[in-house]
Image 1 (cartoon, helix red, strand yellow):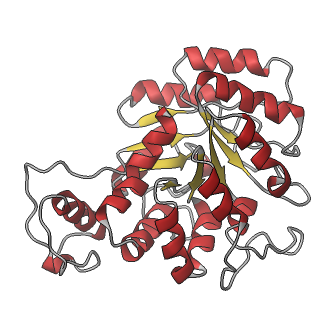
Image 2 (image 1 turned 120 degrees about the horizontal axis):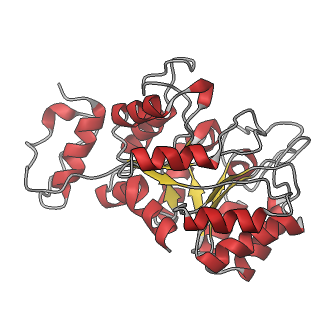
Image 3 (image 1 turned 45 degrees about the vertical axis):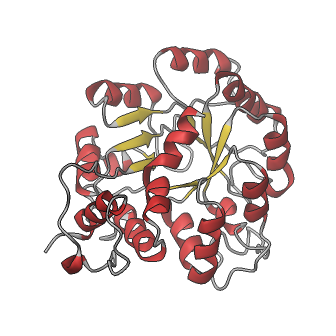
Length: 317
């Protein structure tokens, strides 16, 4: 029997040309035969690192192969804050080895005086965006703004880790993010992490109480409004923060995805080695999220947007 990943690909590949309301994504036994002439759907992971738990470039590519991932935004973390140290040079090296698989982003310590010069150099070397932006600074710090302004000038996306509370990163999303969205129209801001996803609900507990709220979502959350008002804002669905927020209230999430279907980005931030949970709690974030979305989202065009097209729009502007 086909795997769930191959079943999804077969279903989406034929859906554009074969109308079959009886087909259910979760039941591969009733899928019609794939048409070899139909272009197969693609999967782009918008959030992947190389060296989680000392994972190698080759291990990372094997992870992509095992999860059906065609391409990935590979995000460095040059400061090592948050427990992962990954140089932009390492990402560029991986890109030169696997040009058809890796889309290189860059990151450097934005507290450094030479940050803009370094970003210009990375731009010339082939990087396509900034991320993961993750330093212990408030979101309204001028050093954060100058990096967002740079992205605006070069038409780049930037993936920002939003985490309020002690020891957090880019604190103050609720107070300051909209200022940047209004001021800078060319940059595509990709929201990620705990405080970002806590704001799916109108009720957001204090960060020092929990960064992972559970239970039903109260409609009217900040994310709903900002995603509606600013087409240059995107939602990175990766990691435990993304899956936890999306799975806490499936009925709400179905409507949330429908309302913002062009701004939702599939991503994993998965640290496992092999796409089956090796070295990480026997859990693969990529497979977990794929299965969840295949069950929840019934429209194949929307799934293809989430799995690939939206990330390319965020990348290319």
